[in-house]
Image (cartoon, rainbow, N blue to C red; front, side, top):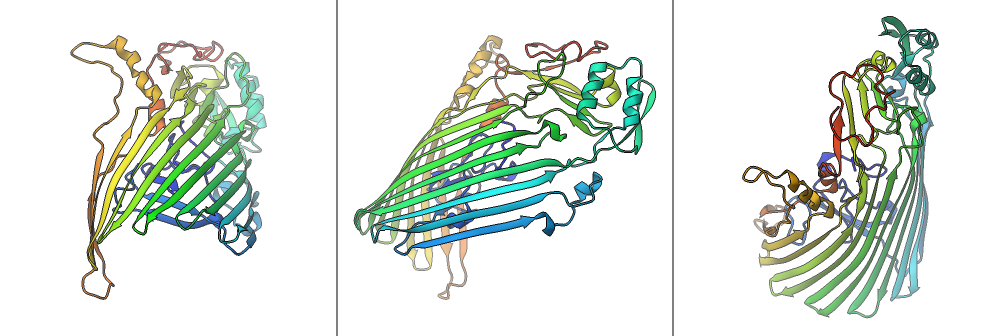
Length: 523
């Protein structure tokens, strides 16, 4: 998908990071970033490895982020909390002032939560539960000022010859008349007064977070730990400029893990983890109608800084299921601490996103739209809205030795091997074989890398006996995971392609259907 919103932040700096919950994967394979959110009050530990890390860690070359969920104890503990932010505590944002809104619009956020933890059976079985409700209500404004004709401007437009009545009625239906004129534009040779329209649309997110953990001690040698995390979001998609095109977006996330720790001897310990996680996101385009078109397109008028239509990236959806199993063994022998393990993952991940699926029509002037001419900036539509399957298998294995040569000098040696299959839909590149030119260009199925060995070497030295100074050095290789957004935007043209309007077919562009959903060549 082009974007994933709610609690995910799409910035390039986080593309190559790895997010885990107690060693269990918590990554979105669509656009990267973390999946489930754990309330701060339910986190017992948070660690980030941002420099040299040993062979146990991989998946990505960037930071290794891990969260540990709280556990219960022999003492019964409970907490009720509320973190409050309110419009009355805020100054006026300059974006609203630019749009002519001079009083502080709505901004109300609460993080209401409660947690309890304690023993089920003292010294043996413990529980911890946290629930948090995070309602956020606010007003949103576009980044720049947006203009529309005044009432007098609309009246003048309705009397002009050569104006398409359908296009004018659509503009008037969705873009309210400006209260006063601040400038003018030219339409069909006539000067039309336009002004800034104040936009303070609704923008809310109701988030529900649930965390539950249980720990059971079978004996001094065996412990069982269970974790369950639930996120549900009911948000509004405010990517459109005009609030009338906003839609609600349901999203749910789950993560469940079961871990068993077994101590074979004072020097040998085994950790087995099984987990399942699921993400379900849907960004609809709404049920908006444009007469003569199969879908309401994305219309942009540069001279008004106005985007007319639903979220330009809608519709899209994404589902991710991940089954994961991990086993790690730690063995201490003299000055060596050996750790080795393996991990298996199975992804089932259908999603759908076609760039410009409804048609993007970018007009330099409102005049071209109202006279129903071909857009001069962009007239493009992605056709073939298919479901992309990111189904794949991954395995990670490693061996690592922490060798304490002297009390103030240690050496870390390790090697990691990663194998990840090519997602199912990316393997469909073989459909392009019909276009092969022997000896010049051939299309084949992408192959998974089978030589992804990642050696790691680290040195830590503390000169003298004070322990106040530490000198570290290291070398390592890592392999980043290619996220699904790359594959879904590079499907074979038989499945998905972009169609552009070329030339100047004259008037009646939208009246003739614009670019139809079944278009298959440049017009």
